[in-house]
Length: 297
Ligand code: SF4
Image (cartoon, rainbow, N blue to C red; front, side, top):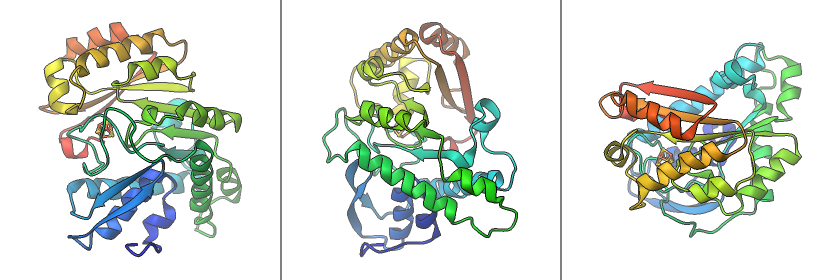
């Protein structure tokens, strides 16, 4: 991988840019002192080869994605999106056009070597390029399951035509300067979109065209806790957070609060969360919970 060649099975199976990044990180982790600058989706970043627990999280996620995918290809169940919204894992692409974001959340699995910033200042791939890469890699991953015992041929054919794209996982997708065009391209192919934003860019929330489902991450219900948990870069992070929730309430589309609750970090402010719901008026609330900040995402 360090010479620009292929990697382990995780590289072959990865369907999205961020996953490519992680599998590269896994690959370079063996060379503990080296660094490598490489292109990741919409931006160029330097990946520090130093290992961290986040790498383990990334590996766990890759395995989990594979398990869910294989289950659906065999006619079984998928991830929570299947139970809640009918989205089939084998027709769902995980992708993000931006690894960068304006936070450094304590539970982020980007292992804190990905770029952070309050505005876009990196090289950029065009949306057409990112979309084609995502589609190609998704199909490649599906093809890897040919001949696997129990996999249904019909599901393999279905999987070659993704119907959904989750714009999340890592980074802040709404930061990507051409996010509107990217979403338009997905919709023009009849691919639905779930976009998760970290509530630091209210103007972008206001200006983006409706996605299929718009999520805002709500990681705390007070200014002090948000600063402690998300470690935002913006000085006016709390006002941006509140403005983002208000922007969500003003959107005429399906919206979601995504709560990531971590014991001893942000689990105690129940009334505060209820007050935020009054501001954002989401149609759904999804809660993830964990006892440890290391495994929250
Ligand atoms: S907002 Fe998301 S990508 Fe950014 S630091 Fe937090 S968890 Fe990581």
